[in-house]
Image (cartoon, rainbow, N blue to C red):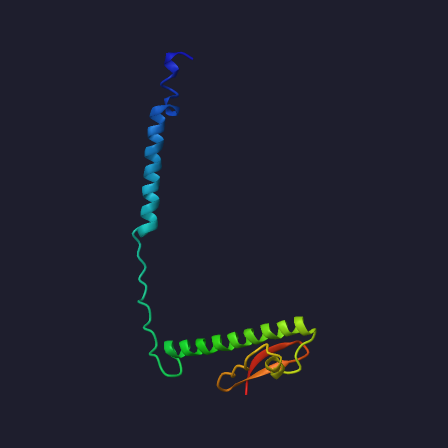
Length: 133
């Protein structure tokens, strides 16, 4: 390969590297333009619907209160079930009723069930749940 072949394969050399970088920059700019604004086509989308007005039984504040009540139910049941499991490990059996957790000092007092609900204890499975009254 003599001096005459150097020009034919220069795209692999420094000149080719600069050309490759320019192509890469152009492709990157084209991709960024497409991602940012599309091809100039804009869809007519309606504005988002206005939120429904909050009421005492629904809406944002109603859902917030319902979520808080649900969290309280879950926390009470989880705590009770953990104490039942602890009782089972230490006593070798599940408590006969929830009051036994208090008399054996696993709990200071039974938690109150949320309004309109009651605690249901299954002594065979050692599980507490919350059910409507």
